[in-house]
Length: 324
Image (cartoon, rainbow, N blue to C red; front, side, top):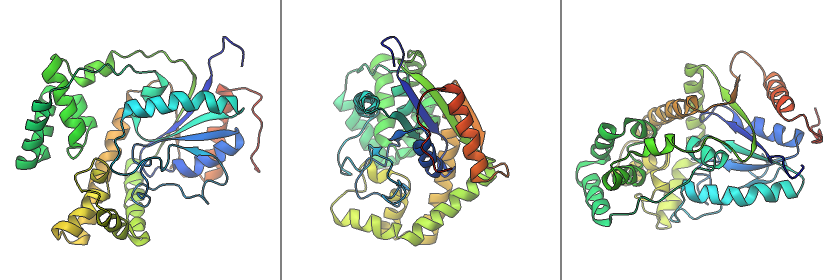
């Protein structure tokens, strides 16, 4: 790379359960990549089954970053993710590898690709405490409905159970009169990187069927015991991490007596809604080359389509390392 060339950055995104993990390993082996997890939950240690975290065996020796780096009670934010990535990307390039972000958290990925500026709007601790009491007394849906009135775009992106981020969006409007979504839309859309975005998609009903099968597999793999262990270690159900999909619903089963079958149905419903929000977010992103991985194709055909996109965008001297 010459001094005036932008560093290359490869991104694979798509909704939950679309099949990013398996494809990402083949891509990483082929284009000599190191993978940065673009997932806001896989940073947490001990939260493996519910986050569909890749296992050491599944990595096939491909180096992964930002997995298992925090305890469930440690804070994590988009600004921290951006900070870590801005350090990791040049380090990966210095090792002669291609940085490769894989995930489904659109805001986190965009914050790195376009260097969003997270100017603090300040804080109003009294306002936060009041909103927290509203959530506790009347339910998080009340806060979410309030956000939907003033900032429908942010409300569409945030789950009602994501109380901390809902409150922060309300606080920004309270302090500045401006909405979080408007602030994001004004962000710089130029990138310091030479970007290659690949998005995976499939028929919506096919995706929902995959989500339901994945959740059934999580239950069989011991998700209930995983949540039980976290609660027994003293991690409160009110933590942001424990409000994640799979953990909140199973905690309701364990702590409130919600029948397991109802907790599982609730989890499937909420995950389908989450996938819909992910797809809505991706639709406003530019320069994504979409690959339909559910259109009757097999893995080899999907991989060939992705490989062709990358080779066309990055006609480089990156070594072909795949066994294919």
